[in-house]
Length: 389
View 1: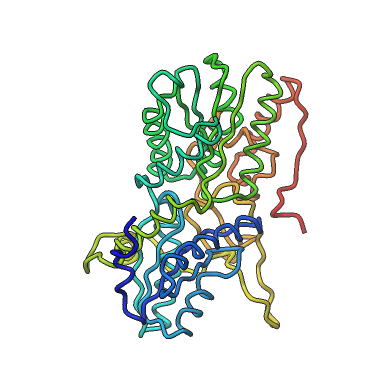
View 2: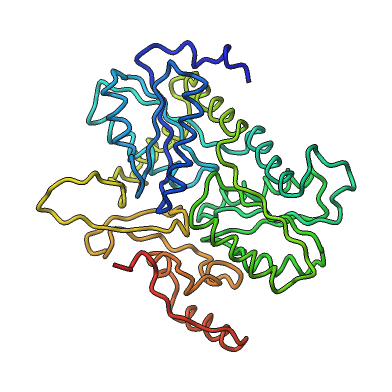
């Protein structure tokens, strides 16, 4: 990437950048996300670069925007630090940015595109896979015909975002020449990681690469590794190779640079994520709202705040409704395949977030538990972590 030729070097002094992330209960993920801003600052030391989160983690997006304004920044370029475009990138982040601009009319914020299937992201993913199987260069045709690739996506209720994960799997499988490929998901949709691996094993491959397509660590990475460990223990004749998540490698930073450059150069009236959100807002399809679990600095107050801690089991890629009668501040629109036999029901009683757990009809919960008992598995009616005081 030609850093000297970048548009970012010609931005006026009142310009700043913010990378908007989801947030996580895992401090490791929070710290690793901050490395994105560090990477951009190292390339463009003259620019003010901040990062902020929608929920749970500090700093929240408002806090980071405040920080930019305090430095004299009035022209901000915001990009979602997310792999695919689902509800957070499409609705939640634009909602926060619009709310902030309404309170700060002298401020201009342009909002860019998610990382997506940029060629640099594909290269970053392939690099992690090559590391997992000790390759220093791309394999030749035939080298990996005896090996299966299983890509783990986060999973969302937005079908097109799930389709992008499957598209990535196919691209990488063809680029590298795997013998077979499958896509599984860590939450919300089907197939789930555990069930997907069980199905994949039936094809008979003795060498399987499992590659999570995640930017950073977090509880889901730990859960994915636990599923892999369990399946591997049950199939000692199969060699499992687990790829690392993406982190802040150079290909990822390159992608952010390009997404920011696109945001800088996008014309007025561009039909991007912000404009699409504004159109939905005007049509009454969405509302501007304060995100339900946004990190709040500690302040003395007589009011009682709603608290809601998430494990990011489901990436919150659901429409949110904010009603006072909801115990912890929000609900999720039911995923229409919630009862799919190979989907999220396979994670019942495995510490799925309570708001997602509540989507399961009791009949589905009872049926899933009965199936486990019939197969000799134990059943524990576990209290979700987000309900633990």
